[in-house]
Every structure is written in structure tokens, then in C-alpha cells.
Length: 255
Image 1 (spheres, rainbow, N blue to C red):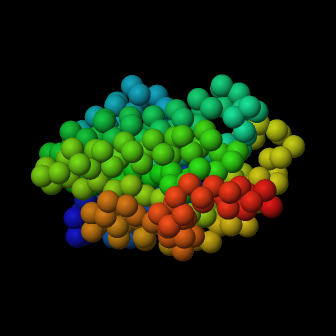
Image 2 (cartoon, one colour; image 1 turned 180 degrees about the horizontal axis):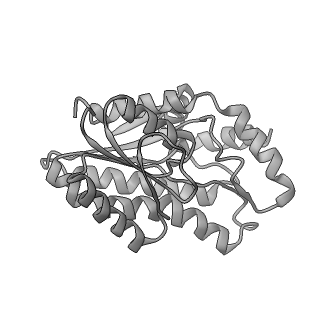
Image 3 (tube, rainbow, N blue to C red; image 1 turned 180 degrees about the vertical axis):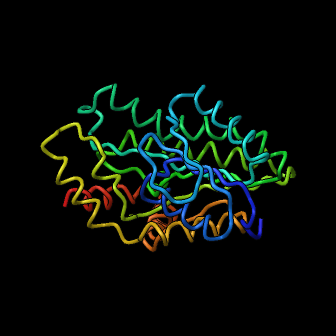
């Protein structure tokens, strides 16, 4: 897909952050955009939908509605995500499910619901994982589990779809200046403000830059799209050090 001009693009988690930036960038390129979120969407010129990606039936109904209204679907970006800080011993089952249901099952629902339309259009699928889908991080086991799962799911699907004309990309953003930290949950409520500040400090990339990188990678059908200079460093750690990266990460995240 060399151009998004006149293409129908679907973006989840579109109310803010990377999702909102993707909507703006796609509209600027002349795409027709179906934007969804559980939160209220800003007025951008996109067609807005209120969709909870954890609700399988709602996502399938959304896919049918978008295909019916626009006549086709050319690009799907499964971007919706949430954050949680808590050790395995601290976190509740409810919080663990909240992360996995949104960050992993939301991607699965969006992929499976829209895939028949993408096969028909020979379009592109972009699933957003994280650099925490490349390395394990203390206090991020639930987030790691979901984002590693997105990576494995997407890489397997790319191989399954070889020869169909459907592009499949997995995105691994590093620190991006979004509201995900402010909306995060923490197993220890007193740590929430500090957690938000710590994520803000390491955010090196703006949402608009992230959107440009993601769309450029999708145009080129890149299997793995790394967003931000920190993403390249983190991607290299397990390649160079193997499991020896873990003590280094432990020290960094205890600062």
C-alpha cells in the first residue's frame, strides 16, 4: 500500500495519544477514517464510534458496520491499550484481566473481525505491541504478558497470510508522550503519581512522530516497526545479551 489516499482506515484507541495522531495523519493523507474508543472522540473529520475492544460481539458488530458504511476496509490499526504497575504478588486478578482483555484480546478481536475485509481488499493490518513485548520488566508482568502475546500472535499471522496480499506489521513503541501513564492502574495506589512521572521522564517520542513512523512502516509492509530511538536500543538488548539483559533492566527500573 503505497498511499492512503482514498483508503478506508480503522483505528482503535483513537481518543488520544498515538491513536489520535494516527487519525490526524491518515486524514491529512486523504484517507477515510473510522475512529473508535471507549472515551469521547475529538472532532477531527473522522467517523467516530464508541467501541469497547474487550467486547468481542461489539467489535464484530463494529467491523460489519464500518464495512457496510464505507464499502471496504483497507487498513486496520489495533492500537487501544492500558497500563498497570504491580508485581505478580501485588496485582489483583481483576487488574490482570483488565490489562490482558484490552491489550491482547482487544487486538485479537479487532484482527479476527476485520480480517475477512482485509483479505478482500488486500489491505494492511497493524497491531500495536510495545518494547515491553521485547523484554521483561519488573512490575510489568501483566503488561509484558499481553504485549508479548500480541507480538507472537501477529508474527504467526503474518506467516499464515503470506501470499494473500495482506500486509501484517507489529509495532513496538518505546516511550511516547501519551496519557497512558495518567490513566494507568497501580496495585499500590500511593505509587500511581510516581509511576506516571517515571513514564513521562522516559518518553522520548511525540505521538505525531510515532504515527508517521507507524504509517511509513505499514506502507512498506515492515514485519516489525520500532518507534523511537529507545526502541532500537531495547530491541538490541536480548539479541546481544540474551538473558543477561535482565539484571541490567532490574537495576534501571529500581532507580
